[in-house]
Amino acid sequence: MKFQIEKSLLKQNQPRVSLNGFFIYMRLSTIIRPMKYTLILFFLVAFIITSCGPSSSAEAASNSQATYIENKGSDTIVNLALAWAERYQGKHLDVRISVTGGGSGTGIASLINGTVDIANASRQIKEEEVDEAKSNGIEPVEHIISRDAIAVIVNPENPVNELTLQQISDIYSGKITNWSEVGGEDRPIVRLSRETNSGTHVYFLETVLRLSSKEDKTLFSMDTLLLPSSEGIIAEVRQNPNAIGYDGLGYVPDDLKMIAIAKEAGGAYVLPSIETVNDKTYAIARDLYMYTNGEPTGVVKEYLEWILSPEAQQIVEDLGFVPALTPSPSP
Image 1 (cartoon, helix red, strand yellow):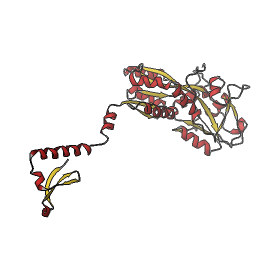
Image 2 (cartoon, rainbow, N blue to C red; image 1 turned 90 degrees about the horizontal axis):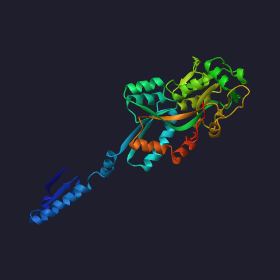
Image 3 (cartoon, rainbow, N blue to C red; image 1 turned 30 degrees about the vertical axis):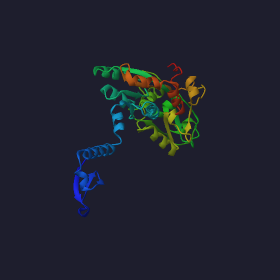
């Protein structure tokens, strides 16, 4: 801070003390008075300097003492993770949580590389990913944090309301190419999918296209349109009456139609919901995961414990997902 005494207003013989643009005028005789007055001036200047200091110093100190949690991965989980982080930070001012998406593969790769505290995934980590992690000194530990149904969605103009798992598999593999083959109008089917780094893509491939058979090597049809986000699939289905897509139940808006699905021909057709996931009648349901390097400790442990609390699991339900406090369906 600049501090100077200059003679100004010479006719009045008044100096001024300049402090960051604030001027204190006094007579020259005041300055040359005994030392006790000089001390008064000194304390006055010290008071002004302190008052003009950065008002955010306390906040800066608080931020410097905050503990940061880096959380990355599944786009299915990202909105839920953001809602959790916002609520938790509001109650724990000494914790800062950074949440980003990018897909389950991205989150797990970041865990393997040691650049995140928590990786979000809408599929289980693969054996080869575990091996790669261990070769880097990382020990992935799995935490089930909620559950989800994958809804198969179409444009509301599409008259098709029901499909079997086999029919959906045949649509996405390219065996069925026209809506008329499954009771709809004579229109070509436009297939939409998430990109390959998405855990939802992997789960849909293994559970629906391959009907949970590890020997089955069925792949998505080459003309399947791969989209980078859940929102992208929603937007395309909304504007294209020939499209079919799939998305986490929590992302499906009211203006799109969800298909009722039967596990096999002749079986009951069931729509996705919290109830049908819990009673195991809906065919495409899964757990959602967070992964840490080893058993969590400190603030990460406390955060994961809170995520499984009734308060946090209510947020799960509010966003259209299925709370993890209920037992998982058997494979």
